[in-house]
Image (cartoon, rainbow over all chains, first blue to last red; front, side, top):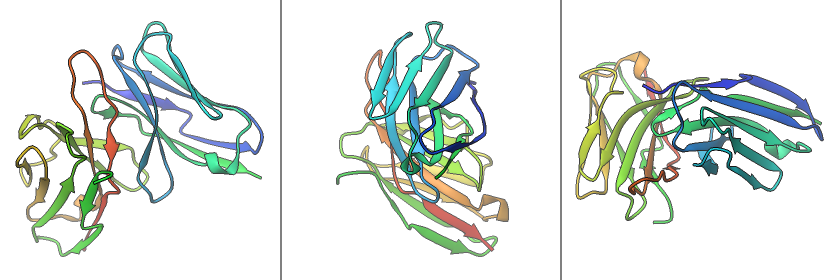
Length: 105
Length: 116
């Protein structure tokens, strides 16, 4: 079965700083999603990547699927308090354990 | 409806009782998924439906857990003889299905189950 490992598990960043979250798969990825979960709330779909080398951006969040299609990175530029939450990568029916992002004013 | 809905939003039950959790997927979504999220943990896959059949039940933790889907729409997850370790948020998601491509899953708000 496919396993997804995220790093770091938690991240504390000062407001305005950039950050990167990584997701590594045990198998080739044929599509990877990124979701955000606010504490105690549901999952919000951010974006999906399907092709090796594909990169997508939404507001200040950029995600990329590497050429070998076994790793993805999520990059946030100029972080804001609204970016705080848990970020989850997912592929098919497997999800990573999440990265908890805290933004310090 | 506009999104995936789940009911109840919260359920407190006594150990040993049976519970039923309901999921209403987005209309037209063939695929339906059930996940479980324990406190501070990631998503644990339980079962996947395509239409009314469940080609992947590999995540069901024990035979106390079962699920069905009728009319290619509503799904019910049943937990018999609940145990304290069943306490978690149960999430349902639905998506389109297509050959050769992956579609995003849309999640419901979840049912928080507490077994006392």
